[in-house]
Figure 1 (cartoon, rainbow, N blue to C red):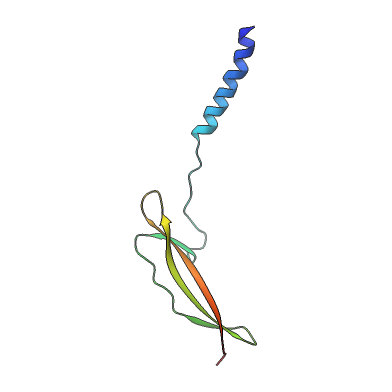
Figure 2 (cartoon, rainbow, N blue to C red):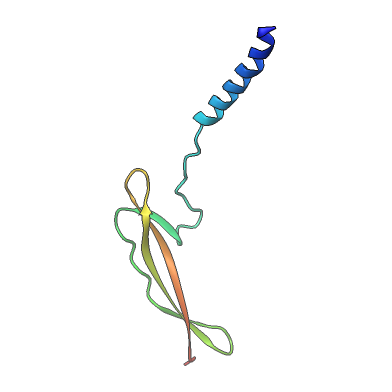
Length: 89
């Protein structure tokens, strides 16, 4: 009779231990390296550019900003984009 109650508890303990031991490790990769990079050096900011959208133009400026570090100590860089309407030439 005791074994009948012990078996489900043993199975539950094994499942709990198995799930707790496999922590999800973060991945710091991007399919598009134009928006996120991992490096100790800051990437160079691209030059401002003007995009003609038909009836108006937009000036696009992009900057790389640090967004923390990876577990191995490298800097995580993300590109921020700002847009403003400008007259077309």
